[in-house]
Length: 103
Image 1 (cartoon, rainbow, N blue to C red):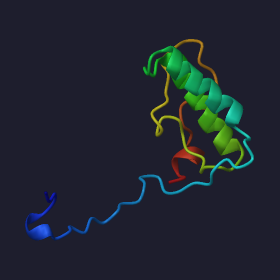
Image 2 (image 1 turned 180 degrees about the horizontal axis):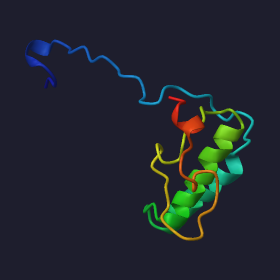
Image 3 (image 1 turned 135 degrees about the horizontal axis):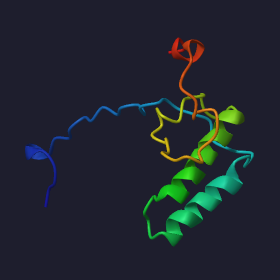
């Protein structure tokens, strides 16, 4: 039994790079405590990424940015913006002219 293209020929599939490029792995485990909490949250919520888990994801990405394990980016670009009165932090303020020019 043969699978694939007719005649048994293989199709060359060209791999595509990740959208945001490559990034170094956390070999030192500097952000491991946060990601383990995130994975526990996902497991407790039966695989749904609710707001509590999303806040842990935001903390993890912030840790990676702080440790130079990924390029700094706004959380809005990463899809981690929370609507709420209690949200305080660097992303809660509107962008200034200095941050808008960095693209």
